[in-house]
Image 1 (cartoon, rainbow, N blue to C red):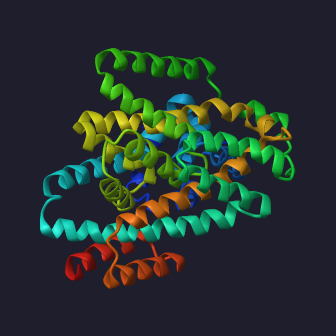
Image 2 (tube, rainbow, N blue to C red):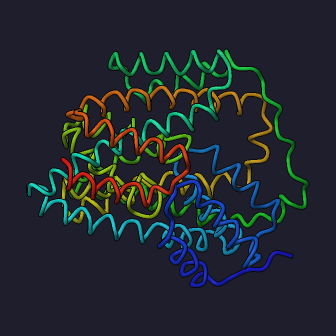
Length: 386
């Protein structure tokens, strides 16, 4: 029998874990160790089912896994406590870094530092393309979806339309994957699903958006953009970057591409998912209230999906076309990341030192050196040599 835990215990446990949540999806291993190994909140089968759900819906996988553990352990309230606890350290640190960035960005040392960090970001994106492509571009058909996605994005087609088209292309082009059998009925009955609370949270979101629309149209626009980004960011946190670049830099013009790259770099030195870059974007646009609104908006849709789809996910993934749609979408995000790589690379004023720094960072990433060491090392070298 799976043991339970009070809401406070869930929040504090995931807050402590969130303080050291570097490495993005790699944190799933530590979430499993906490919830299955140490605390026995879930059994192994249940955790694997939850991880499959988190990998199949938009948003950052690790923080969604935290929400799933909370849902199974303490219902909707437990899911919210785990989700907030895991993400709060990243938000607080990003807020501090955003404030410091706003105050000191014009200093010569700061300019050299972020000039080097932009090179590191290019290496990080290139490594993400390699890892993402190895997992999601497995045949000629998926490679075609990837290439077309890059070409269409380059021609100015909305990445949101590209993602939708890729899902449809997956149904047509990709081979039918073996559907997952539903879990036994006893497993279904054990799912702690509080439908009334889920409906209430959805209603509260709509009410908050309506209130924001009438109170502050600019903040509403910011929230709407972040909500849309999270709804389409299949494949984890890095999938949000092409969407965020498109909306924030290319469409809205809220910040320059170089500034956005600086935010991505800061997102790599904070714990938690890279989508915490949304807090940097929000702070740059509207200060503290912008940071709060952006962060809440970028995490809310995927949270609601976890708690809403968890009870029916087994039936959903047993349908014949589900995996084909997801595979098509994931292949398209490799193409979208290629576009981001090209845009970011053209932003950097390349010279011999920057090329060496970028190659060294890429080599370290490919050798699985912790990014927590790579980014600070790159920052120090940038201040010294650039």
